[in-house]
Length: 444
Image (cartoon, rainbow, N blue to C red):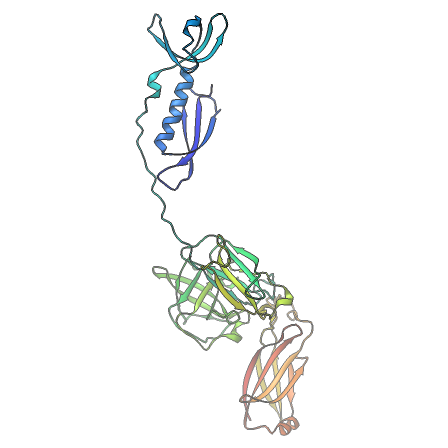
């Protein structure tokens, strides 16, 4: 006989969870458990009463008795309870087996009526959890430059948030708004918010101690880091209007909680990873903020699909993709991770009647090394597109293979150069084309 009994059942008056109740004899020293499962709705006291009765009944029934009765007592059968006289008083036994020969051989076990009286266990009802409907999620596609260098260059990132979070979020895609296939599953909500202060253009490459960004987060939080952690790449975030290819990547050193869910970010590094070239002159209040802490993941996108329009449906994975809670979006991604960075330190010097133009290139791969004479090229070949402009009119466009060019006096005369022009230079990729241009104004 086991001294430990466990019953699994469905909890009534609650969320209908599968629960269990257990009873143990005081002198039980083994770990053996007699376990049963019933498809019944029971309260916890009812389940506890059942296992207590089972265990008590099993202990009492260890006392067995065998006796004979004449055939005239055939009215007694299995399940009947009879009383046997004894020195200590009558003993109630339950007949379990009857063998009929010239008389009736009875096998019975002892029973105690008190075992079947329900015990008084306090009822501790479990309150039902409030049903929360899974509503639509907020998906933000981010066509970002290479940050760690291990990303797929042409694939965008996807940040998803919702309040409340519905659990797993499914991402479906297709060429048209039909025939969708599962692209991936997002299991964790991203830290997303909106700015409560406007943001103006600022220089990149230096910590901006004057700019403070107030952000209201829908979920998650942020924290401060040391200057060493900041320069090592911590607290990376993206700010933008929500358009996939117009995100500015920033870093921040200090995060102060100033209200419920509202943070003030300071010690900001602007225009990281070449996004200084697409930095907006003024970013209004209500711009999106996405923390790039590894939670936003890249969606699956083949290289042949870069630049092609695709349909996306994003919503709770527990629902079908045609459910009303799914968001439908249409995007084409250029693959910003393949885009060359704009040159820096563009300058023009007068040399007699000629103009000498020079610049310094930047690289997308391993460009932070200080022990090399030059950074890796990162492209198949070194090429730059240089243009001379007056307003929006292009006077001259040339492609060069070195980081300098001379605008001779003859070229100037041929172009009918006015008193003021602009010169911009963009690095060229054979796979992407020209990247963002660096521009300088020249007064002749």
